[in-house]
Length: 184
Ligand code: 4NP
Image (cartoon, rainbow, N blue to C red):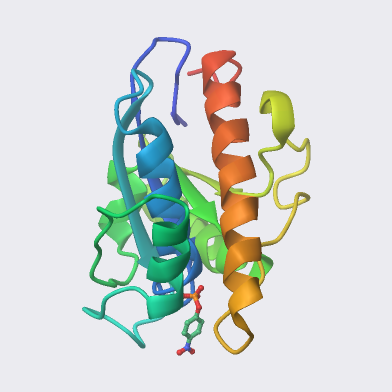
C-alpha cells in the first residue's frame, strides 16, 4: 500500500485533525502554514474535525488571539468535518489526541478493507505529537505527546497548545528534510 513518499522529493499534503476543528487543529494549521507554506516538501495544508459540532464556524477567538500574539495575523478557517476523500487526497492526517487518532485509524482500516487489496494511495495517520525534536519519529504510532483539548479550560491552555504544535511542526519538517519518511 502506498503512502507519503518524500524520498522522491514530492511535496506532501498535510491535514491537521481534532474533534471540533475550532481550537487545536486550526492552531496547528495556522502555525504550520506560517512555518512551512513555501517549503519545497510541503504542498497543501488544511484542518478538519472528527465531529460536526462547529461546521462552518470560525476558529475559537482564543485560538485566533494566541496566533495573533505570536505574530500570525493572516490565518482564517471555516470548520469542517473530515471526509473519506481526505484519506485519498492528503498524505498525512495528524491527530491531536488519542480519540482523534483512533477515529482516523478506524476509518482508514475500513477504507483499506473496502479497497480489498487494490493498490490505493491512502493517508498515513499519525499523532502529531509523534514528531519530536530533531525529526525523531516516535517508533510506536500514537506513542508520542497528546495535545489536550483546551476548549473548557483557561487561556493558558491555548498557549500550551501553541507551544506544542510549534515544536511538532518543527519536528515534522526536520523529519521530512531528513528524507526518512515511509518508502513506496
Ligand atoms: P477542538 O476543541 O477539538 O480542539 O476544536 C473542541 C471544541 C469544541 C468542542 C470539543 C472540542 N465541543 O464539543 O463543542
